[in-house]
Length: 121
Image (cartoon, rainbow, N blue to C red; front, side, top):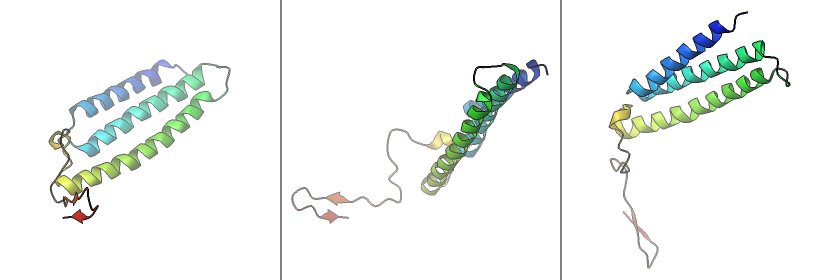
């Protein structure tokens, strides 16, 4: 097997993923682009394991398995963040998320008295 073809394919997949992360405005599509980059890394790890004889046998495949587990956890946390963003903003557009101030729409603001400790709405 010629290792050039999988390496070039992985580079193209990774480039598409980077373009998707930098260009997309929808949070779900950004997560899909990150998954594309992780799959490109998996392709490189498995190809390197098949072509290069290292001291540890099947090390690339083991690392690829760890990347798959990491990707599953990332999707779980990422989708939870996207769902919360949609509940608060009714949009999943990444450009509309303010990074400097917390959202106050629809949230009850409570004040706590410093002397008595009671909560006042």
